[in-house]
Image (cartoon, rainbow, N blue to C red; front, top):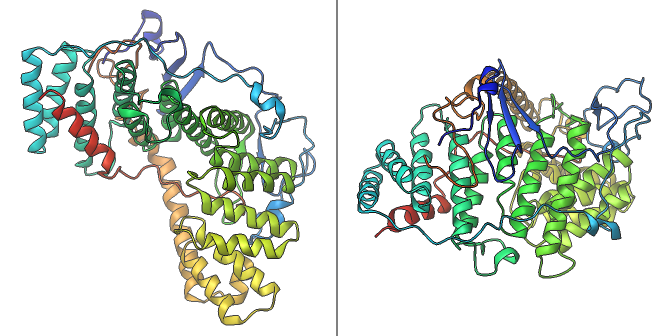
Length: 518
């Protein structure tokens, strides 16, 4: 897979990625191996951002000269009573309930000219049989080589791309470091395969309106590409991979999910030094860009939904968080959280949405409804937010002067599930309580691990960074494949750098690659 490299940008070590729309993305490697992503022909100048300074989203100062107060060690309603900033900066928060929301122009879906599956020569069939044999023996290095040989001769042969990508995935699993150094290449190989699958009619029977899981082999491949991209070692790499993959969805719901993933990653990329209370700084320009992506995710869902009320719940939750952080509008945020819970049955983060709803209801003085939200959330499978729910219930029980045993039970369960330690929990249990001590130790270890990862992440990413591939090895996603991817209110514990499990989708793709030519 060869890149387009001109004489002019060789001097600057700059690589142009050839896609259907010219000059869409450029990648530039810096001395510290950080990746710079630039929009050259599609810069969105409509965002009303006057500057890009960092602002505290929690305990936000009431004037531009007032410094933020130190983060408190509890999760009271401070996260729901944030003073609005009086700086000149403004961030437009999307209003999904507005009649003007539907007027937003969405990028078109991936709908290439259809073409038949190519014929396969006897030589390529021989290579495919050898690749199959090598995969049976778990010799993924040689199987990848055979698939690459096929791609060179048959650049439109879909099974070869899938086989090549899955072989590289398996090969990375044997890496002693526990990280696949070819994440970028694998994700873009799956991207090339997605483009071919759609063009060759493997995009599902219902086309653009397909439900999740009904988008044919093209959906399986693209979702695998997203999974792989999200394991890249640095946030910048994840962002630039998602910005390439976001051009490829052929269904409305796939487009919605990809816009959501990119929006979340843009927020994470500018999180800094999360304190024990969950307070974080987010670069305002990226927050504005993320909110636009969340709005588009919701609009794509409405276009592809079977009912007019359908929403992209996870995106509404993020818009609701911003509504609290930036406008202190708890009532509006509560409507967004409840809309997400009511009208998105597929939403993954239902426990978090119920946690946020309960906190908003509590802040508005509706303790009974808040308790109902928290108790209902505990009926769902545990998630990263379940511990926080136990702590919230314990605090409500304290207000209601309930039995000490029940209060202690919820505090202990919450802290043992890595909920943030609050002053209420510490005072009730005592600083020497086993759950308090263990929670503090885990939080310190997590803080150390995150600091270490941010320090060494760039140097460890050379193998997988799009900006650091040797020029003759760098993958290209082209129009024609040429051969070769709390603050109390906002809590997430996504683990990006864990290696992918041998899940069902990888096995399905391997089966497709090795059986297609028989």
